[in-house]
Length: 82
Image 1 (cartoon, rainbow, N blue to C red):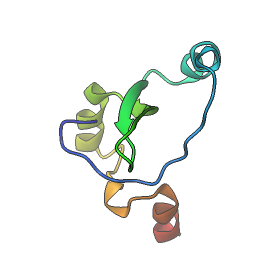
Image 2: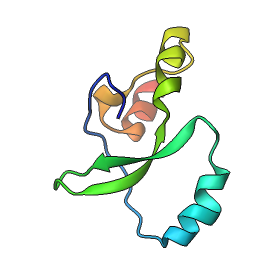
Image 3: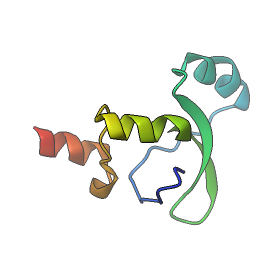
């Protein structure tokens, strides 16, 4: 998680073999993303695709990304934005 804090957001949980993650998903991700560990609502942990910390602040400062974590859900953002 970025050093600025944490936020509870809706996500999707998938169970897949690590071979698929290693051989297909990770190589296909853009360089700004990486695999990180997140805490789930029940306190357990899961691997997740996250934006690299080194990329977050410059993008926020430039306005190229917007922090929508206060909405808690990507779909809520799409609804608000219309």
